[in-house]
Structures are given as structure tokens and as C-alpha cells.
Length: 86
Image (tube, rainbow, N blue to C red; front, side, top):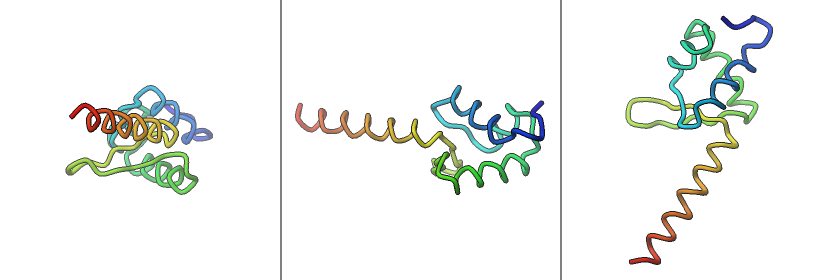
């Protein structure tokens, strides 16, 4: 269970452990927060520029912004290498 004082810190810690991204529902479950409470804090973290959220099909996945930027850069490098190999 998360202390009421540090819900944002709890969300960030959970996302650090899951660089593949998590849904709001999964974040709530892993932090022990109510889904609506977790959603509130996730949106605050998005506003602060600390979390990025993207749609994947019907789901919205949340990532730590620094991790998401690393993933995008890796995907860009892989794509450039694929083009060179063709």
C-alpha cells in the first residue's frame, strides 16, 4: 500500500521496474491505489513532463519519459540499420 504522501514517487518506482510500459489499471494495482487516484497522479506526472502516455490499440501505456525517449532512439537506429541492409 502506498502512503498518501508519496503517490507520485510510487508510480515512478513502478514504471522504473516496468520499462515496457503499463496501463493505468496495472499502475493502480501495483501501487495499491484506487484506479481513479492513480489516474489523477499519472496525469499530474504527464503535465510535469515526467511520464509519457501513448495509445497502443485500445490501451494507453505509460512510460517514464526518459525511458520512452531511449526506446524511440533505439527503434530509430534499428530502422536505419534495416534500411542500410536492404
